[in-house]
Length: 196
Image (tube, rainbow, N blue to C red; front, side, top):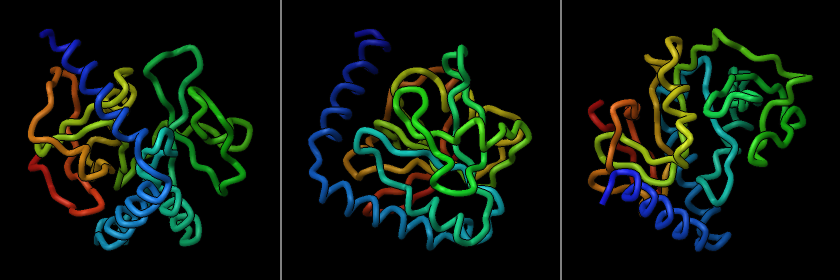
C-alpha cells in the first residue's frame, strides 16, 4: 500500500469515528481538554495563544478563546489566504463577533475588522487533527495548512499542543519529510509531551 493510500484510509477511519460521536461525548471531551490546558503553567504564562475554530466534531476549544479574551491575552486564529491553497495568515479577533465563515465554512477573523499579523509569535499553539501519534506527528485533512504555518520562523519556538480525543492517539502514523511534529498532545484523559 502506498503512503498516500495509507493516509487516505486513516483519514477516512478517524473522520468517521469523529462524526459518530454524540453531542454529549463531544461536549464532555472538549470540557476535559480545555480544563487540562488551563492547568498548564505555559497557559497561564502565555502572552499570545494561537487557537482554531472547531469543525466536524473537532475538540471544541472555543471556551479557551473566551478565556483569553476575558483575561486580555492576545488570541490568534488562522485565516485561509484567498487564492493560495495551503496558506494561512494569523489575525487577532477582539470578540466572537469578529468571526465570520471563511474557507471550508470555518469561522475566521473578519478581514474587515482583523488585519493580518505577519509578525505574530505565539507562545502556545493548540492544533486540531484527525489523528496524532506519541512522537508528535499529526494527520490532518491533507492540505498541508498547519505544516506550513508551524514552519513559520516566528512560530517555531512555540509550545505546540495537539487537541485530541483519546481514540485519535495512535502509536505511529505514516509521515512525510515536511511534517512538523507537535511538542505535546492533550486528550480528555491525559496530557503528554512527545519529546520533539
